[in-house]
Amino acid sequence: EPSQSTTTITPCRRILEDMLITSRSIRCVFTRSPLPLLLLLFLSSNIPTAISMSLAATPATNAGNPQTAILRVYGPDANGIVASFAQLLYGHGCGIIDSENHADHEGQLFFERIHFDYSGMKTDRITLTSGIEQVCQRFNMEPPQLDWGDKRKQVAVMVSKYDHCLWELLLRHRAGELNCDIALILSNHPDLKPIAESFGIPFHVFKVTKDTKKEVETQELALLQEHSIDLVVLARYMQIITDDFCAAYPVINIHHSFLPAFIGGRPYHRAHARGVKLIGATAHYATADLDEGPIIEQDITRISHRDEVDDLIRKGRLLEKSVFVTAIKAHIEDRIIVYNNKCVVFDG
Image (cartoon, rainbow, N blue to C red; front, side, top):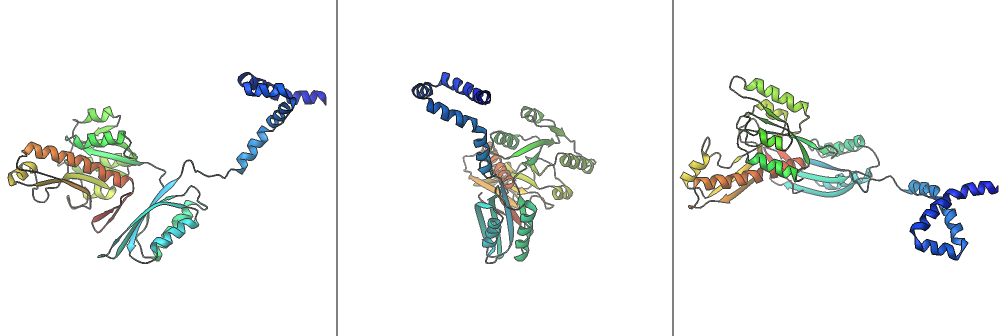
């Protein structure tokens, strides 16, 4: 028995001796009385048990790393929609972080975006999704849009020769303002390849002619599918994309706001000649109807008689850059609901 006791205590004593070397206060305690030493020996021999009990008593939560999702719904306006979704999420163990809704009184439609935490969900995604669909069916709403937030959106950029929107997008993405991955850049010219290389983004050139347009677009769509692209953005891409392309992916386009007044080339020159007092930029979803898709974001700035054509172009590009990235950010953050060829854009 004495030998067993010595064997048991020796490792603990070694640990405590190391502690004595680095702690004067503990050394002082030990020199006064052997009782604290015996107490520490006992506690040290039970440290693994104490740790095990502590871990077992800790609930399995993700409090330090919450899992959040975003739900978007819309349909006929009715009483009880907000309460129904709130009760459903609560019943599944989810907590609402923030919620925003809007009522279109003219169209008698209701829109809601719910950002919720499902770290403590008591069921599973399939069960919760089924419950959400049932609530939508009960209120005759459109199918819900639910993003679980566990996959970064993959974005593809299409650009020609103008580089201002591309620079703005890449710089603000590098700054961490856009929660997405810019997977690749496609262009019909090689001019901007050095920009892509400086950011480490693959750059693909597809020469487009009237005769090869359909064939080239098929190749582009195959490349986008290979990279699991979620969104395509046109950073001043000076080619008209087809209806099939618009149907395959959500596409965000940016252009000046002179349409339909100054269609075609040299719009700033003609606007200056006309003496316009406002210029602007528009970001919208591309559809089969050229430049008539649902508008996501717009902005304007004033023009005076002192402004020359170059001033209009400079101010216009500043607007285009800001509006373009703002629209992309709204899409990436699931803050847009499209209906009747227009958008509800929540603040987020």
